[in-house]
Length: 336
Image 1 (cartoon, one colour):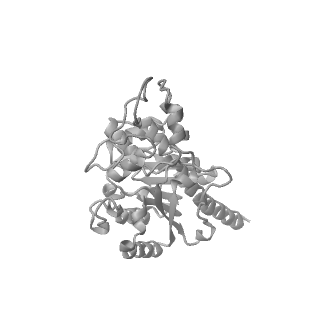
Image 2 (spheres, rainbow, N blue to C red):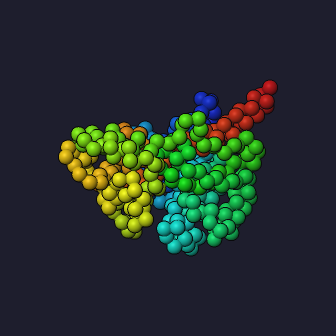
Image 3 (cartoon, rainbow, N blue to C red):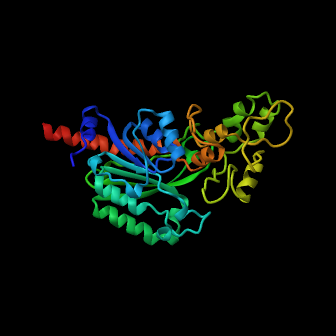
């Protein structure tokens, strides 16, 4: 098979390339785009999520299919392989079956790494991935990456530390090729007044857009960041904000979490308002012009499962600095 020449053309234009698996609705992809990566391909299984990607970025190459059937050989030499592999095998909301869960795609991610031999790898998952029960799993993953020539590290990041109005702790696995790994530094939280907005600050304009007189009073009381958006599982639940504990947390912010609304409250509304899809997307850190394909449940599932763009951007920039600057320095040194 002929080698893909995209990585070469990327170097010529001083940009870096990436391939993304398990792309979802594009939160990670959008963040990596902002971090300076040009995507060669986005692989996603869910049809509506693929339509979301195509709608927002018609120029992206979106491959609709199962990662188990995906070959990355043609992308050999790509700068970054990224992906949000399924969370249920490690989620506290599930049975935490790990490698015994049919949805565990870390082995497929390792296969893809072996095929395309990127300079760096970035894989996102839930906080439960760091639980003690998975220590052997993590050590085995680290061992496999080391055998392939990478230095791996795990990073627990809260979305609220990167300007997202939601706590949302997530684990990011970063693996840098050994000869480039010395240049990687984990992202640091935003400081100096750049803290995340509260739910009220983030949503007050959307709550008031239909003329609800109580929007500003509501916003003043919704004075914390949101709990983690949940309710995105295909096996249970619809367009609501999660199980009982999550619903109580939303209620403390003055939000009715049993379902989503089609529109913002109208004049004369009394009670706790519900969130619209656009509001949940903003809570997740998506820009307001990012559109979601499918019905309400499908769209919310895409939003609820997404990786906040600003967090992906922060990690992506650190990876870009590590592999971009060091690789360029070596290229210049060898040329001279």
